[in-house]
Image 1 (cartoon, rainbow, N blue to C red):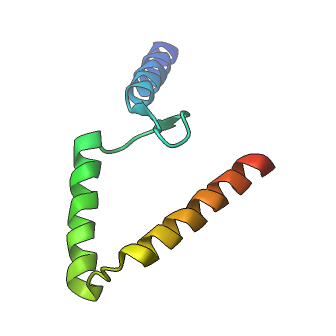
Image 2 (spheres, one colour):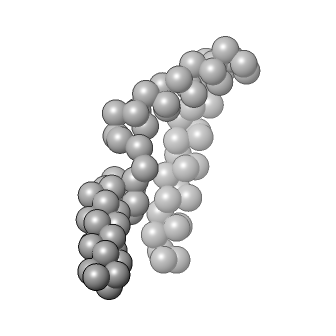
Image 3 (cartoon, helix red, strand yellow):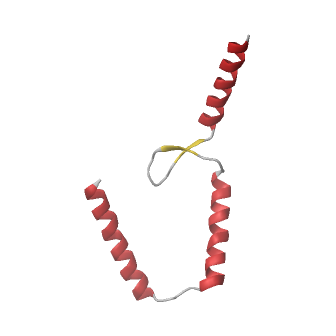
Length: 82
């Protein structure tokens, strides 16, 4: 009887964990997700508002272009070393 309870609990746990897995769009890997996609998007939007309110936004298209160029370069270098 006890082994049946332990087995049932283990199966429920595995089903729960499998249901909480989501595909990470950045890596394509399946990962455990404890919050939903919409909640994560909402949290990101709130964090963006908090950052803008705290430190502001520096509006400089030339600087943004240079940063984008550099981060693209870093992304290419990262891919080469993986």
